[in-house]
Image (cartoon, rainbow, N blue to C red; front, side):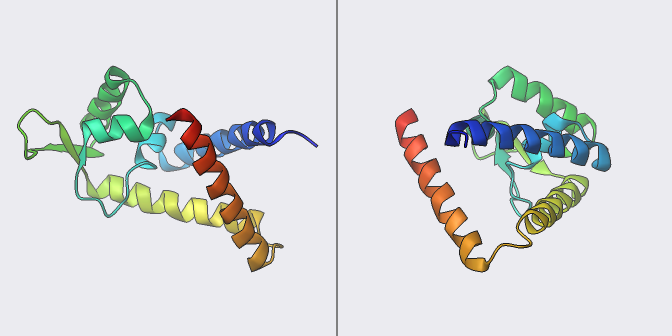
Length: 140
């Protein structure tokens, strides 16, 4: 049996491949999928600085991606409370993509766990959240 981190790394590789498939299916780029997956579909606006924290991307890399997404009609720039802030809103096309991604993720999770009891599913969530919190504390 592999270590937990080795298994997480292997799962991450599989998940990245799945996201590439979803990107192709939705006509988007993987980077766009990754950004959209960090934004809640019901969110009206998101600040550039918050996206940097959520995506863990370099500011210039994120800016390039957001500019491309704006040009492609997935985001619009909107005025923020502070004129120096860069604030973006999801367009209807982006909201549709976010909802589709939510559906695809739910479908995948249901397929993977189709033979699991609800107790096993809940136990996995508890352990993963605990692992995440412990790991996150180390990084702070």
